[in-house]
Length: 115
Image (tube, rainbow, N blue to C red):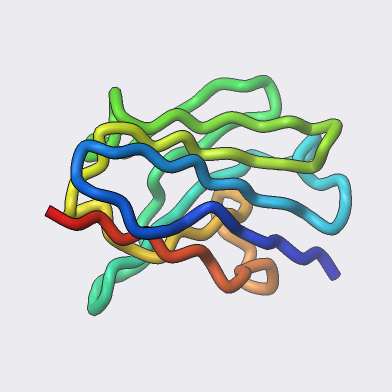
């Protein structure tokens, strides 16, 4: 059973930055398209960014130019660098494959951006 553990969230002022990390219990990143998702209170979980095994990236329009997804297959790690944060970025952030595998959702990490 694969476990994904997200970390790096916190409270930050608008305009600030955070770097999220996702650690996997086994070597999955070499074989899957990976993604970051987020879910705000009362809303559905949405894809934020994806990265292929070859490193190609794709972003939701709302975060283009501000967020950067990266991966380190040797460390079984996925990252999300978030810059110029806005209050509307407030959500719980999750990592998973793309599309997400239901059994692999972790607890997520809370990001709160104050205005």
